[in-house]
Image (tube, rainbow, N blue to C red; front, side, top):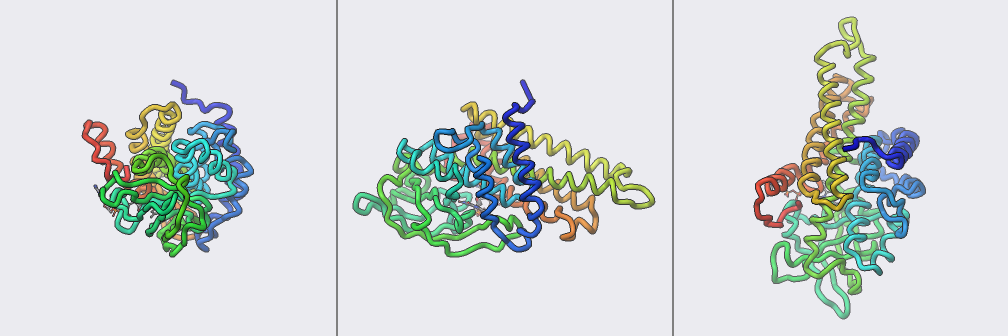
Length: 386
Ligand SMILES: Cc1cc2nc3c(=O)[nH]c(=O)nc-3n(C[C@H](O)[C@H](O)[C@H](O)COP(=O)(O)OP(=O)(O)OC[C@H]3O[C@@H](n4cnc5c(N)ncnc54)[C@H](O)[C@@H]3O)c2cc1C
């Protein structure tokens, strides 16, 4: 077993870290305050090859491995969780499923503009009445001429306002309820109307939109087989949630960095607060839990890039990392005391941003369900975002 990152992985990590320090971190508080989506950052990330870091070079990517991509997501989220999730959805939830499930023609046509960052990807599964229970979705796809008429509404769609390519899920078999009648489609921005933008607790540099669709698309927009869309969605989330775990690790690391330095500077009772054992223990717990979460992420990423089963490992990584990030960003506020609760320091933003990692790409309750099914060898009902 080798815990050392390869020279290439270290290089990609350092490249991302330098970029984040120079072009993300200094602006993150303002983007959060102004609810500003930093479109320009994704152009710069594309120039560095980071909008398709684990996409093969023949499709316009950087050709690195999945673990390198996890390192990128951790570093981006350490600077700004909204930037992190935009790249995570774009890559894990759109580009990679197109590569895996697309025909040669679909791969050649749709992947390079995403990998080059010319277009941003959005993943449109959730509906008002279908979140964890994604198999309940109602958006319909019916045959029209040689193609499909797609009609319906989706909500909570990250980056829809800025996206050029949508991976959208619709029911092709109206008579079959649940997971089996669903298919996946590749849509363009012109096929979709953005109907709203959520006001959120955090993650303010990422947009979360409702959309409606009423479009006729060609037959070649069907991804994978008709009726197999739920499988596409679940396989996508299996990999995607490893990325959300990496995002959680990045947010927690940022909070720990601030708390540790603050504890050395802040004095109480004539001593730096870091000299109090209570504060030392908090920092020790933070460092330990961040390490544990990171190791779970790296193991799940390793399994995935070696084509080994990774559903249970990915769910464990997301469950632990997201709950750890919520807990430890709270402890960072505690270490900063009253200042931690103010906007003078970034830890309150980290706390707000960490919470979402327990919800999207499958809630913690759904991760526990996935893990329980796996360890108990239970039959998969295949009806939840798992
Ligand atoms: C900021 C943000 C960005 C998002 N981005 C996207 C995106 O890009 N694309 C997309 O398609 N979706 C996206 N989502 C949607 C997200 O994936 C869902 O919100 C999430 O899966 C939960 O679904 P829900 O909100 O409908 O909650 P519900 O499914 O209604 O769940 C409510 C509660 O019930 C629990 N629950 C539900 N079923 C079970 C069960 N079987 N056992 C135990 N407990 C259960 C849940 O864990 C939760 O605590 C986003 C959401 C947010 C907030």
